[in-house]
Length: 218
Length: 218
Image (tube, rainbow over all chains, first blue to last red; front, side, top):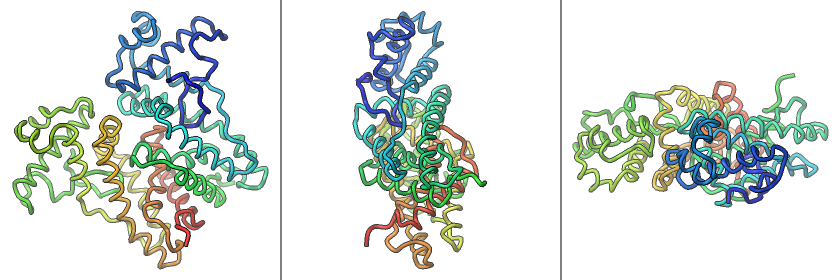
């Protein structure tokens, strides 16, 4: 489940398909071990949550010896942080539909689709939950999203070039704006995220962008 | 800590000061018992998180017998859900500064202030974390925020009357819009929430409101 291919979303910590178990890739055995450990961590988080995740569980499900796990990752916190770091090493790029409105709507819909699929939502939700209990997981999550949001720079550059957004619009602020209303529904107010919610998130971010809310003063 | 008085915020499940332990109020002994149990649940959630909260802990810290807790609340899930229901029974009303912009800025700043104070943030954060592990807590959280956001109706009515917002603007959508970027930072991306973040959240919600994003089609 955790290794199935999905379209990347800014919200979805997920394994790039090139790291499917058994695939030969640069890094070889070490990278395969890391991927196997990461898969076991994800499965454990989804099954038992952070409070129930143990090094023993990861050892059993990855086939990597407990002493190796302790030596290389230190313990459960290190395992979760590294799994999240690895999830960030994919090739996701933001949508490129030809208009800012189209890009923002596609971005919001990607998030809604990812989290609307229980299998797709399980791992990212487990990471978000783990961050409530582990400072290292919280730090890794912060790094994951900062890097993910920064990838939206080309989307904003194209919009500025087309005259759809003010010069100086902050890509991170815009990416956060599109994501925020959906994450609020998913993880705080526990409300459904549907196409209407995604569309409204995109339109709100568009209106605020046009009004210059995300542009730094010249 | 959990019973200290704070200004209400849409984000803060917190005990109204009239329910401080020992206060005589309508409901008498039953209400006092419920408040004592609620205080013990909050303390336990803050100290141990949902996975570590037990009926034994609540019995010990509330002075209410375990069998009574099981009979009236069923168990930990019921205790958490009821504590959240009780937290929603306060007298919070949205800011009334004379302008929509002022109201939204004040609302965003209230959220930032509440969660910027570790003591103020602990209980609501514990509820949000509990909802990852308990469906009943998630349901109670959904109810809490739905009711809280609905209280913003007068704020929107005043803005429509002043011509600052389109008729048909949805108070719940606007309240969610102001809250969402701050909750994203607090609980998903784990970034600081400061006055700048609060101001940007308010201005974005204002721009989207003016653009009619939260108005239902006439």
